[in-house]
Picture: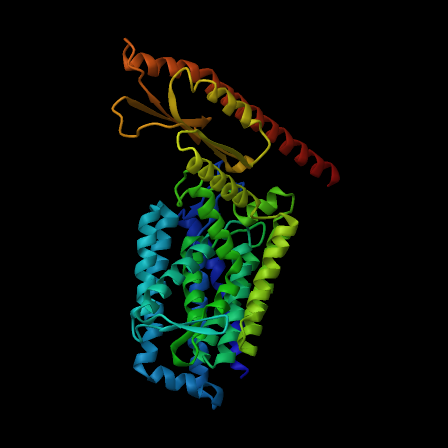
Length: 512
C-alpha cells in the first residue's frame, strides 16, 4: 500500500524539477502573461505553461508507480494491473489521456493567442465526450440523490458531459490569485485519491496522488509572488482529469452515480461559476466576459491579503472535501449536505460572497413582478456591484433626458476590474420593438485607451417635421458632458490610486 502515497512523492519531485525548465522555456519563447491594466494586475510579465510541467510530472509519476508495481510483489496493485489488461477498462483511461492532451493544446493556444469563448466551449465538449464515450461508453444509468436511486437510462452520458464541462470551467474560473488553483487542485486530488482507495479504484488513486504531489511542488513556484502560472492549459486539464476521476470513483454498484459526493467536493468552484453566470446574464453581459466579481476578488476587496484569501478558500474546500469523504466512507449523503450547508452558512454570515448576486436576483424578480401587474409601466434598476464612486449621480443625469428625447430604453455598464469598480443600471419603458421609428446607439466608454464600459440607448423618432439625425445629434450633445464627467471621475480615481501606491511604497521604504 505504500506505493500509492509514494506516487505523490514521485509527482512532487518530477514537478519540482520540471517547472523551472518549463518556466525558462516559456520566457525564452515569450510565452508570458502580460499585465493589461484592467484584469491582469501583476507588476511584470509572468511565465505561462506551468500546467505542462504538472501534467508531465503526473504522467511520469504514474508510469513509474506502475513500473514498480509490475516489478515488485505488491498484492495491492494486482487488481489494477488486471484492470489494465482488460482493454475495455483501460480504454476508458486512454480516452481520458487523449481528452487531456486535446484540452491542453487548446489551452496553450488560448494562453498565447486568445480563443473566443464559444470555441473553447466546443473544445471542452469534444474532450468531455472522449472521456464519457471512449471505451466503456455510458458511465452510469442511475443517479443517487439523498439515498434514492433515480433511473435516467441513456441520459447518463449527456449528464456526465455536462458535469465535466462544469468541472473544467468552474476550476478554470478560480485560477485568479497566486497559488489559489494549485492549492484547491491539490486538496481535490488528495480527496479523490482517498475516495478511490475507499471504493477500490486503485488506478484512479495513483493518478490522483500523482497530481496532488505535482501541484504541491508547483505551489513553491506559484505562491505569491508567482514566477509561473498554470494558464488555461493547466487549469482546464486539471479540472477535466479530477472531474473525470471523481465521476469514475463515485460510481457504485448497478451503475449508480452518487452526485452528492463530487458535488460536495466542487461546491466552492460551482458556487463561484454559478454566481458569475447570474451576475453576467442579469447585467446584460456575455457569460464569457471577464470581471473581478469572483469569490477571491470579493475577499481581496474586503481587505484580505492574497495569502489570507487563498488560505480561507482552501479551508472552505477542505470542509466540503472532508464531507464528501465521510459520505463515501459511511455510505450516506448526509455528510456531503452538511458540509455544503456549513460552507454556505459561513459565506452568508460573513457576507464575503453572494450578496451582490442575491441582490440582482431580488431586483430582477421584483421588476418582473411589477411588469406582470402593469406591463405598460417602466422597469428600472441600478446596482453598484463593486466600488465607491458615485455612479448613481451619473445615471440620474442620463434619466433626465428620457422624456425629452423620447427614450425607450437605456443601459449603462461600467467595469473597472483593477479599481474594483463595477456598476450596472438599466431603464426600460413600454414600446414596440418592431417599430420602424426606433433609433439605436451604442457608445463604448474609455479610461485612457482602455474600454471600461458601454452605454446603449434606444429612442423613438416622434414624427415631428425634423430629420432623425437632428434628434440623434441633439442627444449626443446632451450626452457629451456626461461622458466627460465619467472620464474625469475615472482620471481622478486613477490619480488617487497612484498616490496611494506611492504612499504605500514610501511607508515600506521607511520601515525597511
